[in-house]
Image 1 (tube, one colour):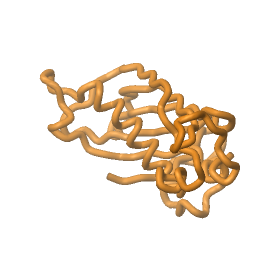
Image 2 (spheres, one colour):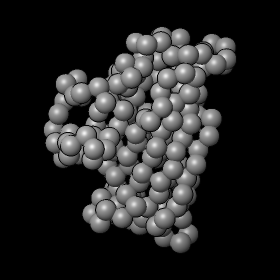
Image 3 (spheres, one colour):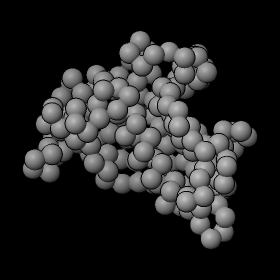
Image 4 (cartoon, one colour):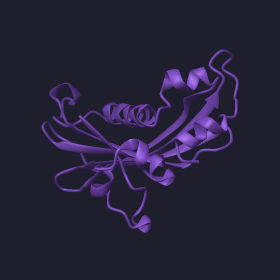
Length: 164
């Protein structure tokens, strides 16, 4: 599995190809908001119909979010040390096409809101070979104190890691 920071939109006039060659610590702040994982569909991810099970796509959206946080130095341990962690409040996924065994998949996430008590991630899962959109949607994360479970605004130090 490979991981890359990606340019958040074509309007930024940078290609995802060039983003994959830039070390994480040297990218512009807005690049820190977007991330992608690439993987190959495995047999354990298939359902009885021979395509990726719907719950696997949901797991991939959480996997890419965690990998993104780790890549920018804001994984669970780092967040907890700052007294705040992100937990999922709501997932929304729209299934367009199915992935099958051996397909190369790009799982993309981009944070569009990050301040306040919540963060919104837009997620896209595409077939890397064809560019076909398989799944898109968003996840709403809320910031909480890990000791109490109560909502808590993230410190600016944490927001900066994600380019805010």
